[in-house]
Amino acid sequence: MSRGASKDLGAIVMAAGLGKRMKSKLAKVLHPVAGRPMVLYAVDLAHRMAGECVAVVVGYQGKGVCAALEASGPRQSVMIVEQAQQLGTGHAVQQTRDVFKRLGKALAAYVILNGDTPLLRAETVEALLRLHRDERAVVTLLTATLDDSAGYGHVVRAQDGSVQKIVEDKDATATEKQSREINVGTYVVDGPFLFEALATVQPTNAQGEYYLTDLVGVAVERGMRVSTLTLADANEGMGINTREQLAQAERTIRRRICAQWMAEGVTLRDPATTVIDAGVAIGRDTVIHPDVTLEGCTAIGEDCIIRSRTRISDSRIGHRVVVQDQCVIREATLEDDTAVGPFAHLRPGAVLRRAAKVGNFVEMKKAELGEGSKANHLTYLGDATIGKGVNIGAGTITCNYDGRKKHETVIGNDVFVGSDVQFIAPVTVGTGAVIAAGTTVTSSVPQDTLAIARTQQVNHPGWAARRRAVLAGGVRKAVFGKGQAKSERDMRRAPRVTRTQTPSAKKKFPVSRTQKTEKRRRG
Image 1 (cartoon, helix red, strand yellow):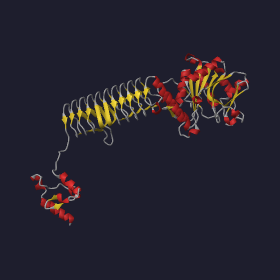
Image 2 (spheres, one colour):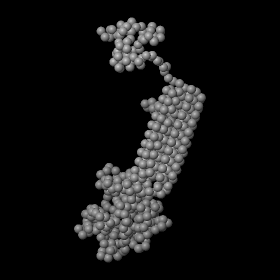
Image 3 (cartoon, helix red, strand yellow):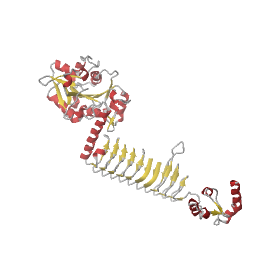
């Protein structure tokens, strides 16, 4: 069926179940597959088939399911229907009757999808719809053949091959359990038949529930046609009920995603170790090396290079960007021709303007590095705005937190910042200023100004040689005053008087006074 025919098609997504076998506090359909709650795969497929005529049945953690739908980005709206009591799949579908009735138009058919089948392809559902139309069936269902069909609904056929019924495993006889053809849980049902037939279904089964599969028996009893489409790959219809199945679905989806991007002109050096979420976009001629993880709503431009063991989440990467090995980039923006890493950490709010560069062991948070500016080594830039053409020396940090509040550092264009500089925010540095290495900037620096803030250097001649002698055990060579040897512990005490000291120093610390003090201490 073509997409244009969706005007008379409704879609129902069943997402009310608990998922006990997942053994999780989280509802089964909210578990992510390739970075998206699995229910979104079914909802997107429903929109593709039926446009705006989509109802989602929620139950357990229904608010969480609604929140996931709202947070997933712009999409067509859905009609939310609550199944307050979990009374079976038939009961779940029947809850949607009123919302479809309020649309005010007759729908020719409904496609019914499960919220826990993320591997189901649109092409398969389109084929199911075509078969339903071509064979003029009242119910058309998707089936699969398994080597081990235990635990599934068994498709029971007559001798002529026609479908007679679907029997859940708990209700099946020994003969019926031998059927290896199982019900996938995806259906197309005629509009006039669906809700009228569901009203006749009774919970006469081991579970005491209203089964949607009983529609098949109702149709057969009335002499109506039931058609089936069997999956070529049974895994496509797999429902996620356990953590093992969740991992299997994850692998399958990620293989599909990698294949899709390679077909679009992206080079993946090792697709088996490349992790790309479903919401990621990548430009052509970008090269992604092994062990790269791209998460969330990340968008990467053309001609980029992303090297190994890098993780990028919810970020915008421009064209011709190079990200070196082992970087972490989260909620950041990198404009064209920028470079990052290796071993860089860009936290939320980090922005690199065109041709800016961040090097080894640099961390940025809520900071903007201007066009052509560089922070190449061992630097922390937090709550900062840095202009164009700025050089940030190694070991520079913005001291943005005073114990209670965060403060901003603003650095103008063409500023040179030497190594080991600390900016005690809030502080502003004017255009063209130079900050000398080792400076602690505590007040604003006007433009074109040299700022130096260091303590005066003091040299102690001969101190290093004497210390080496003590460490080597040669105490005779480390003599201070009248033949008195000093231990290494003594050398770490107050300043000593030596023959190289200035007259003023001798006056302040006379030898005799020092010796007397030492004798009293030892006595």
